[in-house]
Image (cartoon, rainbow, N blue to C red; front, side, top):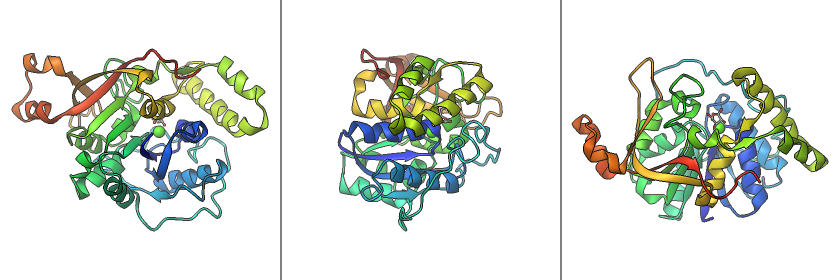
Length: 314
Ligand code: BDR
Ligand code: CA
């Protein structure tokens, strides 16, 4: 890929996403930025640093700490802390010793890289969109300086995974997500419509187990992840949410997308964090309040609505 930043909240599947990005050797990762979500940012920052150490790239890839709070006024506790374990990485005792703490914040790093690699930078976000929104608030030009944003979050036709209508990353900071959605940036939403179809099964797991020592950490994380899915959603296979977003940044053929305008519900207590996607060809016939109609003219959003011809998990 072109120059690439991963903004994440590790997070079991964020960790898998990072491992996938590093493992293929096809990503030119300039930085990892951490955001609060699956665990508070102190934890996700520590986890991200421990992961770059574990995967052997701590010398080359700086990890920047992101925003701790949310833009949203809501201060509900995250439902997800138990899902990814208290630390964010299941039962793992992670070691971040010796990995430098960058003095430059995640937002400053994102803005700097957007200048250094103008129109080329690929930003992949696999957590709540708080850092990306904070970068846009500091400098709205960020939206048009990046090449593209690929984010895991939201859902169009599937139901939500944290409330009946909302997906976790968007629900966690809906105001941030709406700001990003209305920024005009070239973006691709990898929501539950596709990630719920990218299922990792017990057979896949058994195959990884046979690889032995090099993948032991990965297998332990996956086992915790299977346990959570089984407990909270009564399923015995797991969706690879965040790794799919990384995959799409590299190869668009993993999904089929449609162009349109993305909106995020921020007001309703019942449906906060719901993503509403208006297809390009629907726009003229669908009536929206005027200030929302205006967004259809500047939108450069794409939603992945189905998996593509290429098998992501194989
Ligand atoms: C998203 O929420 C988090 O729990 C996962 O890491 C993923 O980014 C899925 O809804
Ligand atoms: Ca995540």
